[in-house]
Length: 174
Image 1 (cartoon, rainbow, N blue to C red):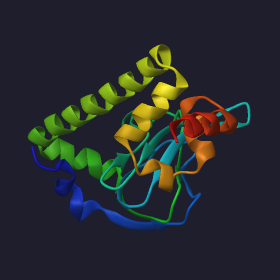
Image 2 (image 1 turned 135 degrees about the horizontal axis):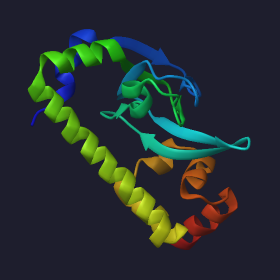
Image 3 (image 1 turned 135 degrees about the vertical axis):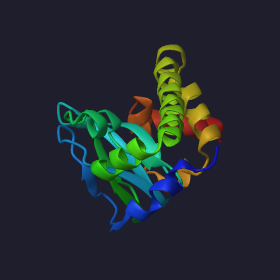
């Protein structure tokens, strides 16, 4: 299976976004999917005024509130840039049109979604089974660039700990 996103290329609209740009607000309907050419994004939820980071995305990733994008329901989370980003945007209408015209691509997209679901399940079970130390070690093993590219308070939020606790974990690793 090649890169399924190439089939959408003629529908992409470029977007350059500054750091801390909100691409989608929690509660809004997602009308676009983003493909990251350059930069980093995060998804996050608001918990009584406190931002909790739920995922990080880098070059080559696609990002959307897929439930909102496909079902036109309010997004469960916000999408925000962490760095200056070069993105390609794909509208929900164009996405659906291409899928309807290409059943094989629809199957590829389903495979892609199953992989994403599996990643989400791994993360969920990691929170149930693993200590913050182990989650940090796994995160760094999977995404070593994270340390240089993502502010520590977002990493701590993602791990479900304070920045102070993260500093302790990092100091133990040194």
